[in-house]
Length: 121
Image 1 (cartoon, rainbow, N blue to C red):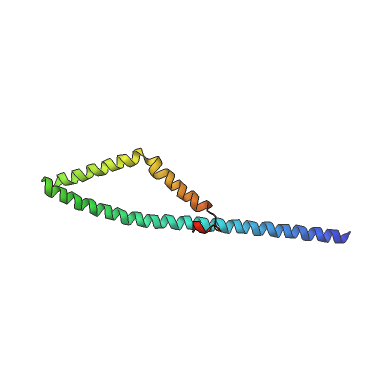
Image 2: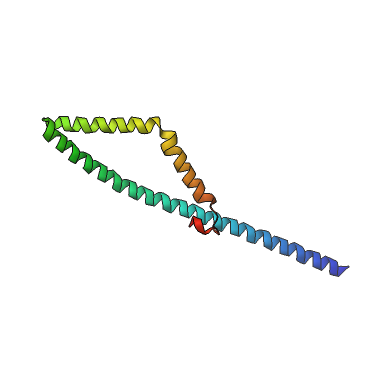
């Protein structure tokens, strides 16, 4: 009879150890996925900052070029500002399709992709 109790205690200890190991594995998996998402966000922020500078300098160059063709310097800057205003309106009217859905899909893909699947590396 006492042997049965010893076996039951060992069984309970094994279950506790399994549950603790499983919790630790889930925590590690969550930490890995969140660190991947954070590193992707930081990389995208750096690329976005560099692209922002590129767009600023390109806009200045186009504004000066247009002002050489049209005449007064302010006219070139107004033309470029108008183009950027139209781009902003286009992005705003299509923000769901152009921004929110692709960003959500990318984040969900990063969170739930299968690590064993070789095509998702």
